[in-house]
Length: 431
Image (tube, rainbow, N blue to C red; front, side, top):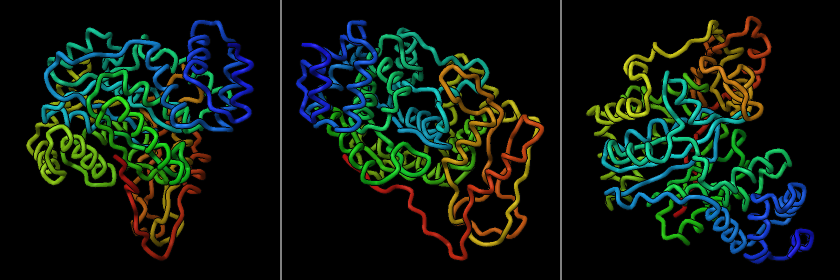
């Protein structure tokens, strides 16, 4: 085999064999195939797609380039959850302690934020001391002792994906459904979970901009999971508007704490309860209604909040941040942005809000950039809310002295209407 023949074959829209995929992936991670040749193949895949069999083979080849975690000697069902990313998406932060408090275990490998989408790891690091770089023995110990371990991707977990994703990121080949599906599922399958819940975001603030693409991605990932005899369920959820009230690392962590304590009721809390109920239903083999009752009881009784404290403690974090949200770092300026008109809020562009938050310092333009945990945006009015002229729409938490551009950009993210819009949170469920 040689790389040029394989590149030409995919350029001409032919199906690659497993051996050809294996040759290119393994050759790349062993420095035997040049990055420019793999870039050419990635672009050919991006333009011409892959069959399901090709996607499965790519997933399996990447999965087997590194460790596959095995927690079979730890008693109980293990789950994992993944979101394709969005603005204000802090679901994992609240879901893990809720489900964990119901004796369902999880090893959660999470990532850092890039661009307008936030990262779970960064949000957790807004808690002083929280250790997100757990070696495999610590992951195992946490799983055994408290049932939950959260970590960045370990060095030996799907190394092919790390290298390929970095190349995709700089060659304009991120938005390919086969490449996204194989990237996500190779990591999920390597983490040793029995149940995998997928949150496929669609809308302006997501990678998937339309429902057809989101459904195709969801179906592809569910079918990949079934090949490995995993229980996989995918929800397609809205990301045309930011999720919840808060966008920004500390701000999102604070909102997650309030949700686990049962102090807020919004789109974010509804999604957490829905996802948690799905996992509990599958793990305990009970109906969604029964599972939801257990989830709500865990919140109301304080079990979920206690589990959140336990998770922070076992990962070296300062529990005082959970007990008193005033412990989180604060921006020096909080700017009130007022409504220029009256009417119903019709839309808040998630992409614009995410980009503003990133420019404030809450996100990264490239991997390795430092982030400011204290900054972000607090939304006081969401789609469906009625506002009067000069009502406060949002608060900008900033460490800049001149915030004129941020204010103007935030106002441009809002659209108003004289009629209340019916909102849809979950578009589809695929299993």
